[in-house]
Image (cartoon, rainbow, N blue to C red):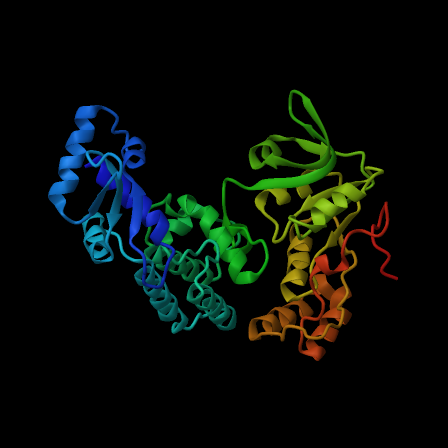
Length: 400
C-alpha cells in the first residue's frame, strides 16, 4: 500500500527525533498524502480509501461541506506501536537508549593505547546523545551504526600500524573484506577527528590510502615526462595523489613553503593574506602520502616552515614532517603560551612529549616542550587563537 508507506514516512519525519511521548495524534491531509504517494487516478484513490477504511487503525475525517470526500487522516497515539511494527521502525526514545547503551558498553572497555582519549570520546557521545544531538559521524538515531563505527575506531587505534600499511591489508588484517575500510574511510576519518580533536587522516595512524589529496594555495608547476602543468591558484585548490605521483618534479616561484595544520580556518586566512604570492601554503595535519610526494619533488633548497598547534600532537606533526621531508622544517609561531583555564596533559600527551624529547630531530624544540611538561597543561595551544593574520605579508603575525 503506497499510501501507507508514504504515511509512515511522513509520520517518522515528524516523530523520529522526539524522545518524549507524543501528546497529539499525527494528522495528514488525505489528498496531499495520495499526491505525494503518486496515487493520482480516481480508481487508485478509491482503492486507497477502501484500504484505509478496512485497516481501522486510523481516523478518516470527512470534509465538513462535502462529507463524501476525506479531508484528513489521523494516526491515533494508540496506533503508533502498530505502525512501527509494520515497517520495522522504533520510537526515537528507543533509538536514543540503544545508542546510549552502545556508548556505555564501549566506555567500559579500556583502550590499550589511549585510555583517557577514549573515555573522553565516550563521555562526549553520552552527553550529546542524552540531549539528544548528533556528534558527527555518530548519530543517535542510528544506534547500530554508532556501534559499528565505535568498533572500527577502537580496532584501528588499538595497534601501532607500520607506516605505509596499505588500507586493504589493514582491512583484511582486522577480519573484514579487503575493501571494507575503503568504504568506511570518510566516516572513520571524521571519527578520528572527533577522537583527537583535529583533522586526522588514516595516514596519521599509519594506514596508507589511495584517495589522498593535497590542499594548497600558491604557484606550482608540475613537470611530467612529456609536458609541464603550471598552476597558480589565488585561494584553495587541490591536487590528487595520482597527479603528484606522476610528476617527475615540481617547481615554484614562491620563496618558501609553509605547511599549516588547520585547513578549515588558518590555512584559508593565510592564503588570503599572502598578497605578494611569495609563499606556497599547504594544509596538512599528520602528513598524507600526497604531502610526502610534494615534499619529495619540490626543490631541496626551498625553505620549509611549519605552523601548527602547540599541544603534544601538534609538535608530533612537526616531528613527522621532519621525518619525511628532505629539507629541514622550521617551526613558525610555535611557542607554548600560558592560558587559564587550560586542558591538563593526559597520560598519552606525556608519552608523546617524552618521545619528542628523546628524538634527536626535535632537539631545537626542547624548551617549549619542557615548559609545557612542567606546567602540566597544554596552554593556549590552538593556532586559531592567534586570530586573523596581523601582517599583510610574511611572516603574517607579529609574535615578538
